[in-house]
Length: 310
Image (cartoon, rainbow, N blue to C red; front, side, top):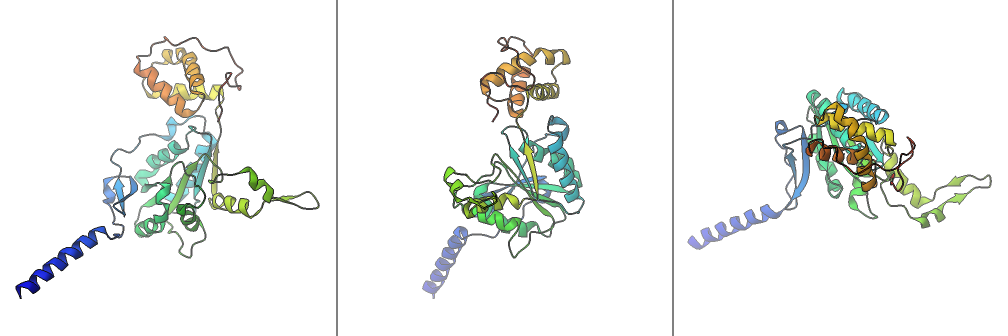
């Protein structure tokens, strides 16, 4: 009998070890711990981790993107109010405020029950589990994927496509997907794909199956919000906004304009991100006006020589 008891103990120990490595169902986090959560895979199991320090950006911090702000704000307000709303795809020039706008909407509506779950594109295959987990919650959830793009054959592509529109299991009414991308169609596009286009006798052009497949994913987002490169005047306005936000005196903001244009020229971009980085540098140096001379004056809506708009 002692041998039998020993065998039972060893079997139970083995089962415990097996359970530790087997996939576990997604567990609910402490929903009161934060208004934002990250979905991560740990040892093969999905985990929702509360974000302890949520980015504090506000809608008032974002300048020169008023049309984009109005579209996403209206859509999010409808969603939080329990009205019909659309999944949103924010595309366009880098550093123009796409992800910042999503974070600002979270901060705007968090007191009304809005929550955000950030998911990496590699974990998109687990979207059905996430949707099922939050389906019965009273909060409203935005599943957010930043800088989304897919390479050919990635499994997350089909999972996202099904959740957006096409799966037999409909996403619950308290979940929307917001994604940002530099690619309108989220997939790489190649020159050879132009060969698949067909031409009719009256001159119409129709895309081939490969192109149609790539377009079909982005078309499943009901709301498209496009962002564009900033003009020189818009860039300076954004710089001024961030300098004020960082406590720089008003008289110093005008003095910083020339230095900000040099900074943008050196970075090859007049994006909102570059404006924010300059403002932090300027404010951190004690508002010194010791920058290099500005480049030759350019027309208001023309970039300085050599500046990359993309």
